[in-house]
Amino acid sequence: MAVGQKFTGIVSVAAGSTTDLKPPTGVEATIHNIFVSGACKIKITDGTNTVEIDTYDSSIALMAYYINVTDSYWVQIENTGTSDIVVAFDGVITHES
Image (tube, rainbow, N blue to C red):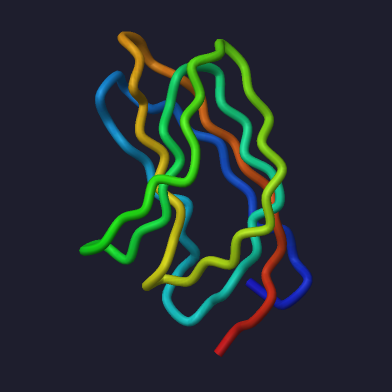
């Protein structure tokens, strides 16, 4: 990964499960958009402490954010629904050590 490259992903998340939007060790990124296909909670975490920043109950949501993430501070999506959802995100790599 190099500075300026895309930081993107898409994943299926089972009901009651979570997924992490987290770059590899030594990489920093900014997440610009998060797309979800169902009910979820959007959180910021360091693995120990967690802050809920948004909750969505809709069947489809597009959230425009500018969230800086690292391997020690990242976004976590929790599927709060009763069936699988799809989560996608896009952003850019901002630093690489």
